[in-house]
Length: 244
Image (cartoon, rainbow, N blue to C red; front, side, top):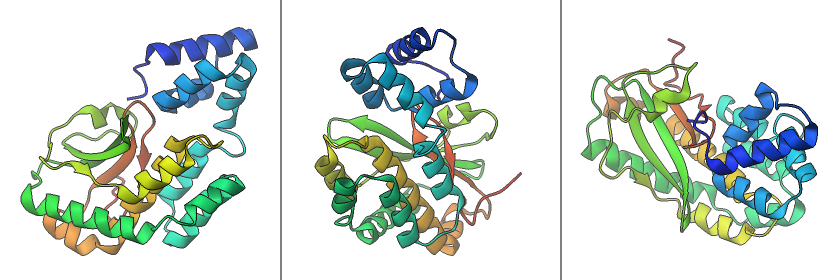
């Protein structure tokens, strides 16, 4: 996952290290690993070295998107409370746009897609984890599902092992796409909103429909994670979560 660096990420690291006159720390490198390609490209083309360093420092400090994602993924708060966390992260103009986001409609749409997929494409008994991967495309962002046999929380490369690849693996995110388009050009990078909303939607569908999902999958325990393909993984605290 984040261990394979693109040329642009290497350039970003080089500029930051030149400005700091030292190598980046392990935490600072993790910050760069987690950036979406669009973020890296924007900062390389539009920002000076000082602004690049500020971006890297922000990830593990106040206003950190990583802290936001981890909080959303690991708590059992209600949907409205989770949305409030996102709003507190955003600037006033962005909050106003998010108020028009129909999160319940997105949750219903995602649930219908997931149930249709699980009904039409049986999950092999060997699958121990679901990875809801995210990537950028010409229409904004997409979310897809694969299953893996082997799980290793200490090595995110497990999510690259597509042992179960359902035919209709790409989820519809119509509401999110509309919101992201309206936020283009504003201060907060759209990928942050996309990741945060995806975590809320996945977590909520598993929490509200755990019995049906267990029946469709045929097991009680399953690891569930999401993240951008070239970024960090966020492990979602669903009722199916297992420490094994």
